[in-house]
Length: 486
Image 1: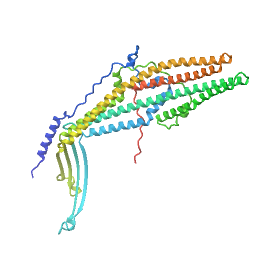
Image 2: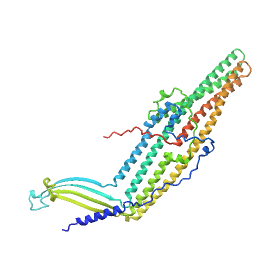
Image 3: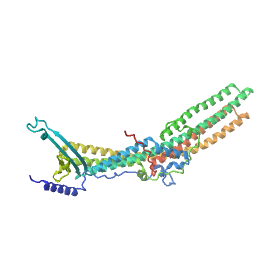
């Protein structure tokens, strides 16, 4: 028999030479970051005559001077279940990337087999029972390696790396969202508690007014009509209290769930009223270009575009044949004692070709599908850029206007309180009627409630601006939970 090993060796050498020659060849388009048209400055920032450095600082929540808020955000970043979902997706993407990298390496297999076969007398007529018994044993180690001549595996690794980067950006975006949600809900809670205090204080004042009116009626200096009007105003103010108490309960429930606990877990800790967090120093968003380099949602969209571009190369590689180099070393014998003797050795060296590339119609359909996915990813990236700019512009406007409204309503609340006190004094002196007192007290309640609401919106506006800037935050890895394996 002719020995075919020299030919196989020549074939293997040729395959290796071709592999080395084409090692840098990868079909499909190379990824290039798209050009984006962005303004030099934000509209609100351009109208500001005294810009300050960017506020995209790490741990923005520490700038509010509220230790309880900072602790709640830290707890949420460690235990929030939505963050754990995002972390699991990130780990899954990394596992897929490791699998794609392993495709570039030879696949090693090993196996062993032993057989004891007895043929029937009908199969082997005239042969004794002992001679119809046969035994065989074999053991082998094999390897198979796809020669990545046209970059299919390299493009797949490139796509996997981009998907993993997108998942990391998704995790960062989820952290931005959760930290912002905790901060806004906490500020809303403290604002609602302040509005509840205002309502209760005004109810106490109106109750005192009702007492004065009733005393005048009893002394013959007033009428039942005056008493009814004062009582109606008190009851209207009292009616505001249950709705505020309900909203306070909702906020405490939301914060507890955001920190990974049951809704009732933080009621005892948060139900005691506390002051609103302090407003941070004056804020500025720097430039749109800097913003786009920080926003994790923009980074995730870009990485998905990169992955979709690489997937075009994966599909395009199917237009070309797929070569696989395989080999096997083993031993085979009729008895275990002879299994490792020299004449029992076996080997195999083979070069395989996958001819499925001839199905050009299906391959070109997959290439078109990948191209459409890349077009969609490009549009999604451009939309992410526009939404990031819009989000920041809105946050800047919202914060600036809320601060202006806040300042005006603070003065209005102080003036209304002074007017209500003066009206009470003048009423007791008989200089004005009850209607003037009730109107002054109603104005005080409205002004103080509006000021508390405006101050809350000013602080939540600062939170929204920090969230829109989304830069420089230290990444917290949520505590991992593993499903018990049986």
